[in-house]
Image 1 (cartoon, rainbow, N blue to C red):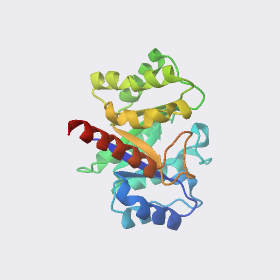
Image 2: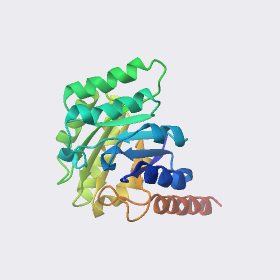
Image 3: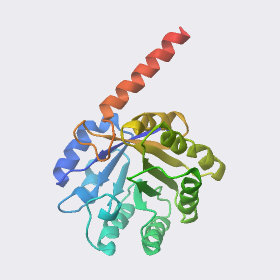
Length: 236
């Protein structure tokens, strides 16, 4: 199922909720970047928003804003699972105890439909195909429900290597979020949805991107509308 996830990174809960309500009709999923909040809370988002929510508490060592200890970082993600979040995101490089803690919280929820996204980012380059496939296999071995691999693209070769991971993921039977950062990677943020990608990420507005090359949700919808009109025109 194709999903457009809008990432929200605000300093206060009230600001985050307000932005989420504004862009809600354009989003299939809303990502709450807990690492951007001055005071981390999850309950207000779950109580006031109706869209499926994804909670991320990205550490500084993976390009995020959380600089505290690991126990404090994982605690709100566990709380989000317990209170009905649809998704939580954790880094592949996080300690195994963190992986296990989130998987146990999901299992303890019984009929909970929360899914664990294990993510791996490379902000400098796009590795070889062998390394990318190896990362995907590691994510699956860790018990992730969904894999996420995002790299920095310097040319179209990098973009193609990442997009072609969808074929590997299909063979491994694991849903995959995969696209590239940077100017060459912009096209991959849309193309991934047409090539089997589980989800793509957008910013709430043009000046609120949380990663290099991230489009605003309004722009992404404009592109999709143009593609739909072009297809309908050709059929007519």
